[in-house]
Image (cartoon, rainbow, N blue to C red; front, side, top):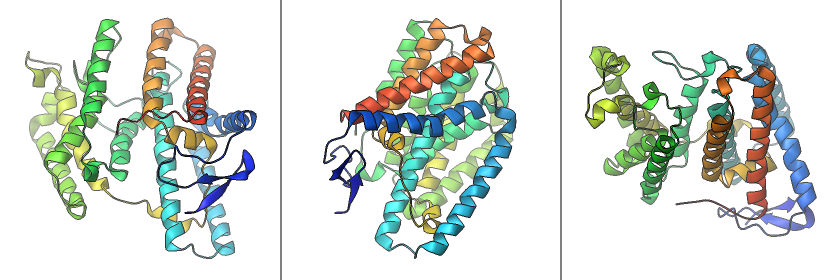
Length: 346
């Protein structure tokens, strides 16, 4: 088994076992939190700024970062030989982990930022047609599930159902603001994830055929939308039955399921072009507690909305709240990782 030097104790080594909560060696608390703080300033804070006060400059910075990335890739490929198959697989896992963590961090930031006026409406979920930043986010959730697909392990989707009912009961109990046009009266994204998992378990096809089935599902769903289903879903009319009450969430399952199937036991080919990579401490902390981070973000978002009139908050207040929220989330996730705590239902 390969091992890497432990940056917090040079005389110890960290294990690269799949069970990543078994880490050999001790960590230094001050060095760990200092590194976490640097990672926060480099990875999290810029994202907060780019979809708030620097939103108009996002495209320019994205182009510059892509150019820098391409330059670094070209430089590394000229200096290093092609990696072995074993190392390439390791790089692929790191890239997938980075993608999962980046998606989770952006999701945690956006679910609160969208409640403030400082968050551009073009990034919020679209009401009718088109694709926005938050639309990409919910789709990425499904894609992430397919990249680390659990269907081969026959794992129950009961925890997702429980989380869905907990969110439903808690939001109803405190009269929390819910946008009905997003998922419906009772539906939420946890139910969507659970339904996607259940469908995949019931209609269990080999991975090599998942792409074909996913394409057929998406094409069929698009045909239904073009033939009148979209008019039903976009209308404000609702009956008393459960399907009509939650039509947006229930029918969206087919779109998410199609995307899920397209992404099952898939791989990100970018790893073939990168001769080396390094996962930050903050990424590792979030990666070991993705579910816990997402649940904590939902709780903190609810507390902020119950304590602050987000729609009336000034830009300075909104930015301050977002930075405090993000730093609190990152700190708690970091402490949990340092203490070896991991919230995992499967």
